[in-house]
Image (tube, rainbow, N blue to C red):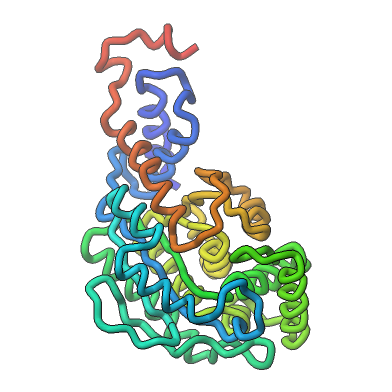
Length: 340
């Protein structure tokens, strides 16, 4: 840690024309981003949301309220500009790239589409591991490459989103396995299951968990239960840490990818901004595991990186006040009247 820089940042924040701590979480964000960039004048440049999409073999077991083909249909919606993530990115000035990590569909070339297909969806982990070790390596490499390419363009803040019917099932098993929690504490309604559908989903996942001995470590768990999109997000997160980037973490699925990456690289926690608290059951427990306070609580459970796009203006405001707000000295305001 750079103690002199930390002290200088605290002093700069405290000397703004406001009572001490009056900007609440914005002050914490400004301090975090300043420490991360090792600067008293941090900047957010070329913010980008990467949405990773893939199909899941477990979706064939009826664990979602939607059929598997919705994955590719929603990717087409992203490319046409019709999804929530399109609207929010456009509204708040973020670039959007859609990554085909493993969708069971052949897309036509598109300027916003990244072809990173590892395969036409994972295998059904009820019967066999979701992916091979080689496929996992390929996913991690793709995710890292995409973030490295973004960093080379000057991007220093990235949000990760996802699309994949069945991926809350994958995330629930990863969370249960890596944190040693009962599966029932990790499984939620996903795309909006009825109580009967949720009971079916839980039973299927319990069967899958029983079919596989406890995987040895985060990468083994990822290969056993993960999706190609979750694995690519993991590689992207690890690369973002190495590049010193600000990482915006979306909801349950993205947080599960973060769980895997964080167990591999604990320093990633310093880069993370948890954008919102999802309505999905497991997400609350994940946030509690890191003692993380999310920026927003809007009852979202959509994915797509929507929480990142909605939270980004808060990050902008945190950096803006640090850089542009007057100090007591520059404004010729007596600090003794405001710092009470």
